[in-house]
Image (cartoon, rainbow, N blue to C red):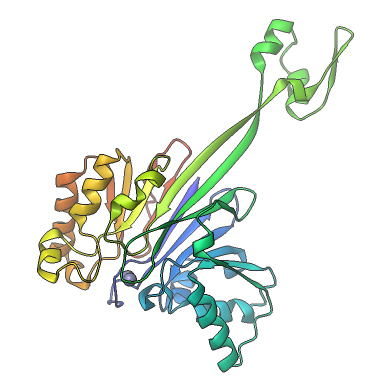
Length: 320
Ligand SMILES: [Zn+2]
Ligand SMILES: [Zn+2]
């Protein structure tokens, strides 16, 4: 299962109720987590969400705009002060590496752990981050190069071939238990090898987290195996028509129509313009999504948490 915590859902600038972009994605089987984007103030949000920088395994930065990365360096410095020693993978545009390295040099910042930078252009192949978590980047369309990230959790477990054992007449109980645990057993004068009766089963959870983007259809291919899309919806269509196309963002309608065409079962919208953050603004976005998309959808608030399981079931975590 993947567990999502929204740490910032405002576009451009922080507001009193929403910080700028950041999203924590945790493998629910352990403490490993991935951070997608790190707007200014993200490290404070991380503390409030009770996430540890020690168990952070990778940071993905979707693009170089400040509302998606200005919190990165402070967060890296704090992890150093907390004596992090494990290497940290950063998948980001190459300018982010230059910026981090220049800032470190100019501000006398020494990190006691290695950073492993991966240029996002080279991350369009699946990149394994831990035994169970992997990441793949997908190019989007924005004023600067922008990317979405597939975050995939793959779980394998061994299942006993009980049909075969029943046919052989092997009694349930200790014999089955031993085989399940990888031990060979003696039965009717023969050795039954555990490996012959264990089948490996693989289950996958796949979510896509988009960066800023004005062409959701660029994710069509990636969405074929995704159970959840998290995408910006900066404006309603009416606002986008007024603002014009130059900021290169998506409206709720654009994302909803795309999700409907793809028959996506789950959609979470985020990165709302400050003008759409009050009750009426959120209602307008929600109404527009509902008009064009029949699946399960949510508008994210800061600190909202969700789980996505291997069957593709998305659930909002009820906090108190
Ligand atoms: Zn943005
Ligand atoms: Zn942007």
